[in-house]
Image (tube, rainbow, N blue to C red; front, side, top):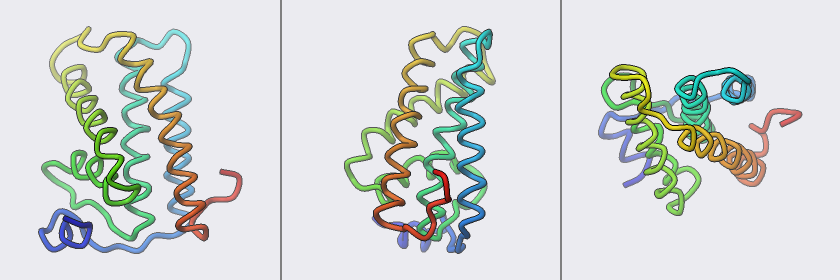
Length: 151
């Protein structure tokens, strides 16, 4: 599979991006990442904010490549799974981990308090820290014109 095949299947659509859009997405990531680390926030809250940052970090490379996930059923999954096509096949394990976090997030948001443990939140926060660095490095190497200033 490829992003183009996903587009032909209707899971993605072509939509060129701008430097301003990428900059705004990084601002969302940085806000959510900061919120995930706020003192006094519940573990569920930390995890939710970290997940939101991780999801945006999956979307950024997709947008840099000129694609947007079609809204609807599975748009989080397609955003996460797209890492293997944007950053490379070695990212499929990380995508699987983020997908597991997505399911855990769903439990915490929709089903019950306490589904998320402190270690889950800490692990996801560290994942976001590394993924942000890797996404920035990838843009710097592959799509320099779309790297926001100061990032």
